[in-house]
Length: 170
Image (cartoon, rainbow, N blue to C red; front, side, top):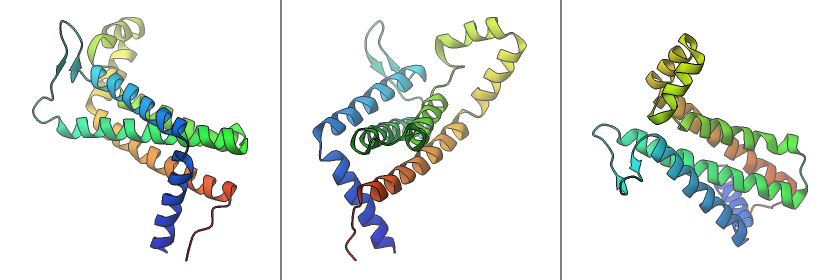
């Protein structure tokens, strides 16, 4: 059973990434998301000069940013593959896109950096309360986003295998 599942994943990945455009899409989305998330988390600074710094005790957060970025790139490229090749309806592919947006939203800490002051000033006490919640539970929310993206990945693999009629060797 496990061998069949591994083979199913391997064949779906080969099918999607056999086209170089899907590889380019996945890598570019990964790079953009990683740059966005690292700069929002203040691990990467562009001014006055380029600086990359991981504070002590923040390595798990850094690893979770890489995981979210990689999974978003993977899931979006799979979604685009399904839309293009099988003319799948947006209802079938919406799980992949929804999981990607949840992952991206959870990956960005709105209480970090320059976004906090405008949100607090516009929303008042409700904004301050929500930002406090996001600050405290940022890492668990990102772990939930990773779980959602992994579940989305498995759904995409299942959809690609069922729609593309990939036959696994026994």
